[in-house]
Image 1 (cartoon, rainbow, N blue to C red):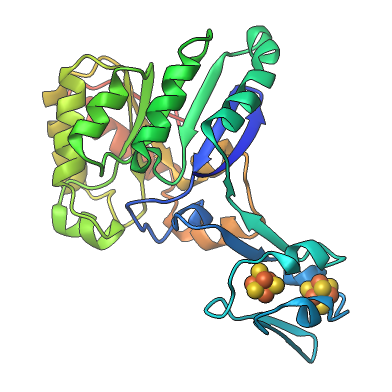
Image 2: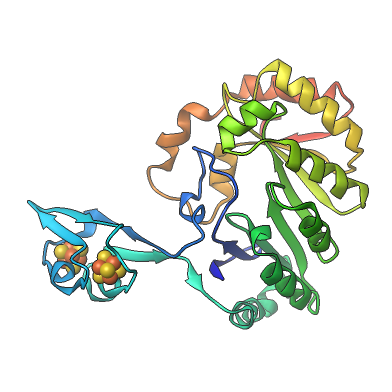
Length: 292
Ligand code: SF4
Ligand code: SF4
């Protein structure tokens, strides 16, 4: 299993590597691939050439202070990560057993009891590693922990329903009601995630539905009305969360410099968010958003 773990004010967050979608605005692109990856922070390079000499694959070159690493040649021996004196290289993801993950969750339990006792499984897509996820959820169930799973729903229905039996709350993000556009947005059609959301809602599982608004991609009146009609059918009792990439970026503990600029043009303005909210409310839905 490849994971990354963070302990925040609201509890522990377990990031699974590997995702079934490929959204261009992904805030965690380092979690799309299921494999271990090396990232380079080139600005820190002092041009000492230790990595060039230490790489057994001759995958690293340094010319006129420009550092280049050929990922095709790299065998992930991690020598460069260990020998670079300026910490230019770092790994994304870590192979950890369920036991190791649980040990880290348990170290936070005293802290949890004073604040919110929550463990969030996210990614990537945690349901792509069902055996591991189910095992961890069962283990977490032995403690006073609120178990939250974030998903896109583009996963086998049987897996989702098994996970639902040991999950207190899902964060379920929907993206577009037109399957062709959804495919262009994410690389996957929308039939499966919409079907799964119907199935999950029918079980009475706790589901926090989130609509991620992307400017000029899914905020058209036509799509919002189709979304409202779909959500009304579900009869979900929790308020729908209206989010922009900006909201998610502020929520994430893995905020990265420069990300704001990359996504700025995709963030709807307050007026558009209020219009979307008002269209959805006309369907009798309860909507929460940062914009009041
Ligand atoms: S070892 Fe680190 S600091 Fe030295 S050249 Fe390589 S990347 Fe730069
Ligand atoms: S991980 Fe190993 S093979 Fe890959 S670039 Fe670093 S030193 Fe070379």
